[in-house]
Length: 325
Ligand SMILES: NC(=O)c1ccc[n+]([C@@H]2O[C@H](COP(=O)([O-])OP(=O)(O)OC[C@H]3O[C@@H](n4cnc5c(N)ncnc54)[C@H](O)[C@@H]3O)[C@@H](O)[C@H]2O)c1
Ligand SMILES: O=c1ccn([C@@H]2O[C@H](COP(=O)(O)OP(=O)(O)O[C@H]3O[C@H](CO)[C@H](O)[C@H](O)[C@H]3O)[C@@H](O)[C@H]2O)c(=O)[nH]1
Image 1: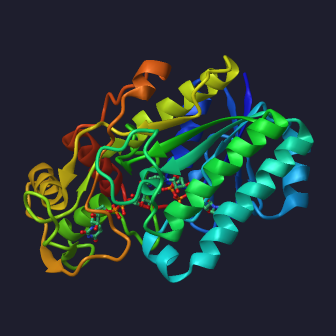
Image 2: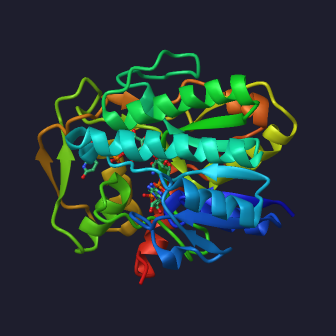
């Protein structure tokens, strides 16, 4: 059994990772300031409340638990907010990650898996890991900066890291015990479910004049359980000292906003009320993974990431309340 420090373990993806770690026989210790996460989502191991930028609290927690590795999910990730308040994103995501890496180096912890994003690529369809960064907003920029930081810490201090560039994460735990609960919610699938079930007004479709077949943005959606499976493989890969450091995590298939709305309606058996709205600042036209490096190196493939599978699991979670107390 390994002890894994999970920063952001109270959040959407981090809580699913904690569940998977526990199932695999490990001890997930969540480190989270609960700014966008939920205490009630931490069910699979202890919660250590603290901020990434608080070096003395990090030192204390690392000394207490002596983790074998870190899964680093904690970040702010609202693109609209990042566009309005870039300083907040640079301080939290970059400053916080720097504090974490320094604390890990001082404590002799040498393995980290980092949550990066396809937003590092900017306006670029079918990017591979070698594609040059061109982020459109401070959120993508902050993630690109942390990837660079990891490379420097690897060279100087031997810190071994894997960065996963997630495409659009969707769906929920198969048992609907945990799920996606952002407040405010900004992601398309939960918003479409809420609109269709009368829990919010009509969904706004942000931009219908993109250069895509139906005029709306295209994204590559990946099931949260497939995503966390990649993290377990990433930990093994670090243990075996694998050579690659960055992997796209997507299916290579893209769906437009209209296609997603239509599928949510199909699965629910009721149309999603929606209205056309202007483009959202910071959105790329299309983002679909153009790489199968994770398959080649980690043996990872998305097993549960069809649109109906992701939407059905998200609906099951919403039907159980879709939130935390
Ligand atoms: N959801 C997606 O589609 C997606 C796509 C690409 C990348 N990502 C990345 O995956 C990670 C997890 O995303 P999520 O959707 O689960 O987000 P989330 O907001 O649900 O979870 C993030 C967690 O980090 C915590 N946190 C934030 N700043 C912190 C700080 N300074 N100190 C301690 N804890 C802090 C929050 O309280 C929260 O529990 C993020 O790094 C995000 O950028 C998400
Ligand atoms: O009410 C909405 C919400 C979303 N969308 C559209 O739906 C698509 C998906 O939007 P999401 O907000 O669900 O996700 P993003 O594509 O903005 O995802 C971005 O933000 C995520 C973090 O929140 C990840 O980091 C991801 O890599 C990054 O591309 C976009 O075209 C967006 O414009 C709408 O039309 N209406």
